[in-house]
Image 1 (cartoon, rainbow, N blue to C red):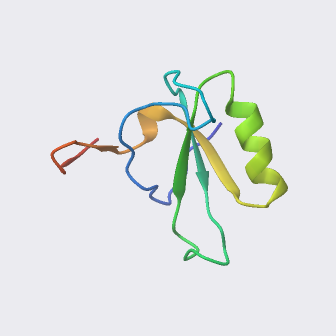
Image 2: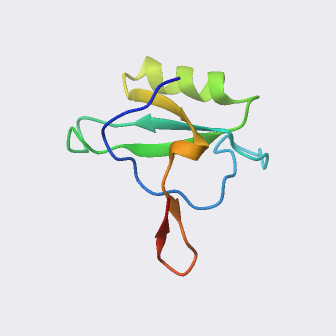
Length: 85
C-alpha cells in the first residue's frame, strides 16, 4: 500500500464496496478509467480486509487500479456536505 499525490474523490460511510458485504472498509482502492476520466481523477472503491485483494484484482485486470491506501488517507464526505480530513 502506498500514498498518492493525486486527490481521490471524497468518500462517505466506510462500507465495503463488494456486493452483499456490509463490513467496515479499511482500504481505499483508487482507480481511473482512462476512457472516461481525466488522468488526475481518482474514483474510490472501499474494501474490507476480506475483499481488498478480490476488488484490487478486478480493477487490475482492467488496468484501472492506480493505488491502494488506508481509509485514514481518504477525504471523508460529511453528510451535511462539508468535507472532513
